[in-house]
Length: 261
Length: 282
Image 1 (cartoon, rainbow over the protein chains, first blue to last red):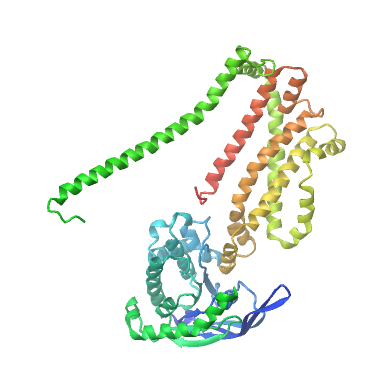
Image 2 (tube, rainbow over the protein chains, first blue to last red; image 1 turned 45 degrees about the vertical axis):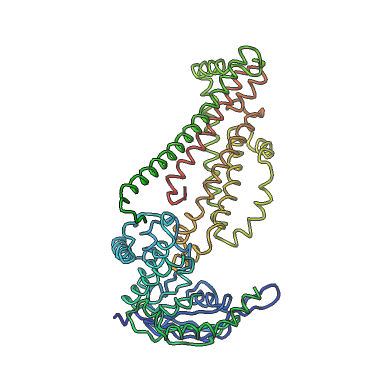
């Protein structure tokens, strides 16, 4: 659609080591990943495997110890727009100000800002709440604000750190459907971290399965389902196979993570 | 759902009864709210009436507890003669000037210390060490330096509010959810933008609760400062002098006015907090 908009995210041999007491802890070890432009990639892995750390390094929220991170083709003022799990929207700004925050920081004029924000509010069905404050919204609505804020920047890369993780199961399914629709209309390069295997398969073109700490790529799986997608794919045998394959890859590490923490 | 043929009328009847019960419940809640309101208004009125009656019937010693009507009469006399205003004005000036400037300086310093690691490392321990020092104890030093003028009194109030606000503002910055600071970073808020859109609004709830604490402390300090021989004006002086001359009515008038000043300032702060921070819950 907009080939110029699309960026490739490349991470080469990224490692992150921090110290816990006197002991070095390897959160990530030689983690390499190339994300194709305009693709939706999910990272799943046991707790503490460094998947969020990796995303935060890409988003410039955390320093890497060694390694290279490049966003090719992303000469946008906001190289990568971040969506947090929850509490990421500013409680002191109205919904509209939250959505246009990224644009304001990059110096977009007030009128253009308002137009873009209103367009995005309409797309996430929150136009009636433009002047509300986040505490007046439900959890699902707040996450829609967070997602709209990321899309509204126009950034070619979206980094999502369990954006639906704090929602109840049913709201979460609704939001997954909406996210599929939004993404299929925009085709941004998305890298998303999630705990939920079903969510990873439903949303993405590619699932990266990470090992337990230190995090490395255990398996790199293509998701074969056609787009546009719907929840119907859940009933297909391929879906079940993919899901049990991912779970088998994760099971031991999840158990280990569970027992050490 | 009911499967009986005559269901509509039965269901209508049931719905009607449910609504009646719900209305009765709402009515009960409303009655309880009225009762609470009545009690909270009646209690002080009854207390004052009781005071009046006991003082007149000499159940309590009217030399120590003059009847409220006599205090009121004394107050009206003092307003007419201008005596009350002559004491209220200096107290207000000391409070608003010293407290206002102290609050501004404290907020600025606190926000800067909250944002700058180096500044906090430099000044943090120093301020922490000075904070528990009773500010009123510094007053003689101020008198020594500036003489028995207005300045040491204003400075005493200034120092008091400065410390309260500096600590409240630093805590306010530190209490900002890390996620929100990161959201600021992720969307390109740096330098002054970060301060204006993230740090300042994020710290505001603590700043306001600090302002309320500071108001209370400032009223105490201004009264205490006026108690000392260094002052011949102010409500504190009025209270102290009325004790020495044994005019209890005037003493109570001073007490009442200083109480009202504290209450009005606190109410104004609560009001502006609601106006300025509409995003706060509740």
